[in-house]
Structure formats: structure tokens, C-alpha cells
Length: 241
Image (cartoon, rainbow, N blue to C red; front, top):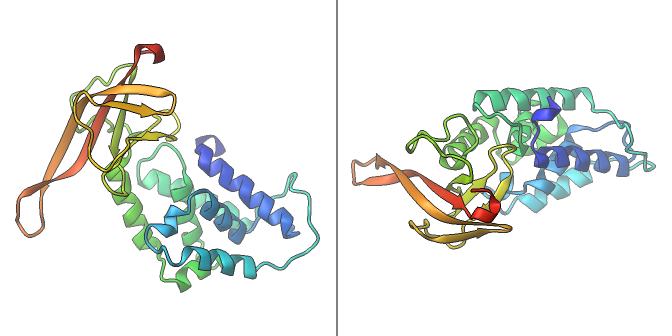
């Protein structure tokens, strides 16, 4: 299963192991895993409940019973954390995602309802059903690593081309790696790029060669509005296009 974890999800496990070690715990518990998730991807709470992020982190730290610092080498997962990882894999399958990311781990924590971490999240009104719908909606908006990557446009992405989708925050376009779902970069500004625009994603330089909109009517029966937007970026020749 771990080979399907994204780089961020792997870091969450390392953060959790360090938290458990610093607390002198005998194993990695749900609260350590949740602290790791919030450290690596605070947006799972901050985007929806910006005022609650620090409060939840503080409450998690306050529930820790401090012992002597233990070595994190070989620190095992608790049974509840093993179930959380299994739930995370199930959630990835449910969403047809090839990789297991921090969002799936977050759903896994919520599904382990009797765990300390899940009870704390529930006390703040955070429910697995709501988060599952939010993550599925966000994946539809900007997921680019499923087998359906080309459903918005003509087939044949070809080598040296990456695809971005409108990210959940504003109108920025987020480009992701097809291999491991890592974020390659985000198009600057809040407007959707236009054909011919030059875009820099760190070391990657490219030009927009295609912008595809999928439209849907508003619920009130008003004008058609863009529901999903895909941006095709052709990389410069020095990067293998």
C-alpha cells in the first residue's frame, strides 16, 4: 500500500512518527497522524474552517500525555492507525485515484470514529460525509492524474505536455505530475491563462497551447458557466518537448 502514497502522505507518516516519539508514546496514534496531516496540508481544515485550525492543533497537543522521549526508529502504528491507512486506501479507490494522498488520510481519520482524533474533529462539526463530498468536488475541478485526464479535450496529450486544472482556491491553475500527483506549480494570477501565454513553473518553462472549458447551466436556469477548465502547457525544448 505504501508504494501508492504520495510524497506528502509519506511525510505525514514521518511527522506522525516524530510527534509520537517526542511525546514518549509507545506507538503512533490517531492524534499523531492528524497532527502530521495538519502540518503537511493545513488546507484540509483551513480552507473550510480557517478559525479552527490553530484551535484544533492546540487541542491535539493538549491531549498528549508527555513521557520520556522515545526513539522513532521502528515505532509501530497502533491498530487504529492501521485501520486509518486501510480506510484511506478505500477512499482513494472510491474516488478512482491511483495515489493515496493526505486528503485520503484525512478521510481515514474521520472514519475511525472512536479515535481521539476523529472525536475531536467531530466536536468541531467536521463530518466524514461532508469532507468526502468536498474532496470529490475538488478532485473533479482540478484532478489531472486519473485515467480520465483527457475527457475535456482531444486525445493525445503527447510528450512534453502537462495539463492543469482550475484549483479550488480562486481561479489559479494548478499543474500536477502524472506520475505521483505532486504539484509542479501554479499559474500566477487569478485569471485563466490564454493561448500563447508563457508560464514558469519553477524550473519548467512552457507555453499555453490549449484551453478547454466544460460548461454547465446554473441551478437557477441562468446562463451556462464554466464548470471545469483544463489548460495544456507545452514545455520548452530544453525540457524534452
